[in-house]
Amino acid sequence: MNNKVSVFMPTKVSTISWWAFIQSVGPAVLVCVVLVWAALHFVKSAPPHTLTISSGPKGSSFDTIAQRYSAILARSGVQLKVVPSAGSLENLNRLTDPKSHIDIALVQAGLTSNADTEDLESLGGMFYQPLLIFYRSPQPLQRLSELSAHRIAIGAEGSGTRYLALALLKANEIEPHGSTVLSDLEGEAARAALLHKQVDAIFLTGDSASPTTIREMLHADGIRLFDFPQASAYVRRFSYLSKLTIPAGTFDLGENLPPADISLLAPTVELVAHSNLHPALCDLLIEAATQVHGRASPLQTAGQFPNASIHTFPLSSEAARYYKSGDRSFIYRYLPFWLASLLSRLLIVIVPLFVVIVPSLRYVPLLYRWRIDSRIHRRYGELMELERQALGTLSTERRAELLEQLEAIEKSVISRRMPGSHAEQVYILREHIDFVRKKLLGQEVPQVFTHSTAQHSR
Image (cartoon, rainbow, N blue to C red; front, side, top):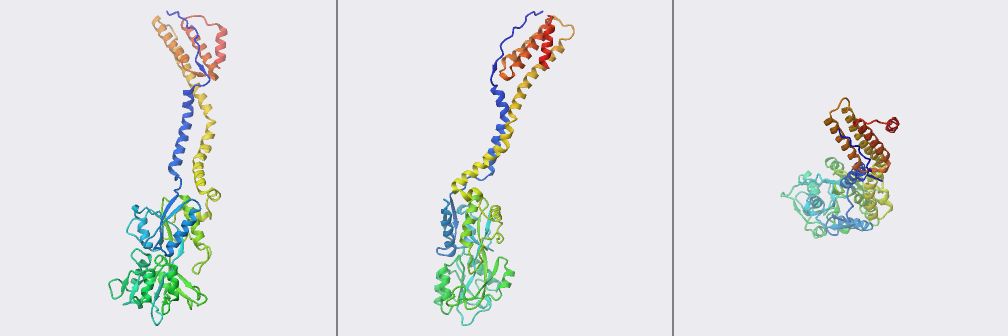
């Protein structure tokens, strides 16, 4: 029989069991990391400080508007690069071409492209773009079909003017390669050709002509502005067109131009962007558009544009939010753009931490205590199992084997670091280990000791 009695060895007690603490805090830290990653992954990064817009021919109203956007965005530290184009159709084609690196563009409603436009979204209708048809004739024309077999300048390839002109002429059975001569002259070149009788009619819109050119045509002798008596019928056939009634004297009160009320057709021009446009930039662009297009003019009432209800491309969700709230978010409204951008991203990361992680930290000490208690309870389970095995008559070999197991249990308790807050439980456990050892050795256990250990175990 092994009569060896184990002498108490000092237990390694420290103020904290760092490994146990790390295991306890680990889940909370992991959740924290996942939240931060999700915030950074699913929320857009900081907005870029440079955007590129495809506008229109140099000097056209499209180009002028893009330059005004650029000046307004520059106040917020965002550079808007203006890239001239042939007009709306080229703008749309550039947006669908990844190699063009165009972020936004002014696009006339009703245009179509053979390329994939699924990535494009509208920031709303920005303004009406009236179609102005100037012609030379001794008598006013009543229908576009009367231009058949004449020479007509319909604008350059890639312009919205040409696209719309071809659609309207086709509806009047006038098509290319027929008796009617269609040229690609636009803007100032078209004006000069009409004045010099090189063409009989010209189509002008804002994406192909400057305001100066249009104004000069209105004052040119012998030149008439086409009135659309059938405007309502055109609007029914072409859903992207609107009928505009221009009162007499709208363009020039002194000379009373036009001399009588006339009807014009006008598609709406949209500001089109890619679906990944940063929300902060979306707000800036609509705010700039509001400053440029929000006032009353001969063609619109105050506050009519920008307009969220007039669009042919799907309306951006961020644009819809802006139109609904009527303003930029709070921090972008009162802070510099770069600072607001930084703060908004920090809030996206910090708020989940405070809302989810901070309240959960109150449970970390409980979890930590539970982990330490579970280790002590595990040893008690081993001790109870060993005591059950010692019931009855034991052989010398079996007794020695159980004593070795008991010594292993005690060694595991001694070797593992425990926080000082659990030192009492550890020493009580060692008293109970010694209690079982005495029973295995057949030694008498004092009654006081028995009651004392029972009291502690309770």
